Image 1 (cartoon, rainbow, N blue to C red):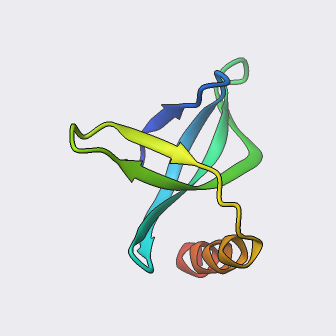
Image 2: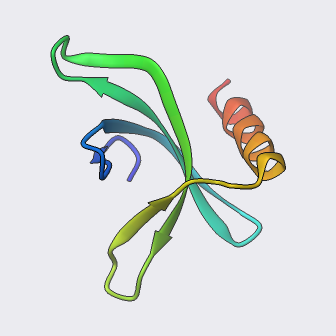
Length: 80
């Protein structure tokens, strides 16, 4: 999904910067797309990515703050 634009249920679009697996789960990091300015914003998301048996992807918020911080730090390290 890296380099693709995904649309959330609320209609917001995010450009996928990176994805990774951590402790058996998949995560992605994306930057919000601003269609009016034809660019990206400083708003980002880090979510869990779940794929069902049909290949459909669902994005789920990370409820555990410690896991969110760990994943965020790992993504930041990978971007440098």
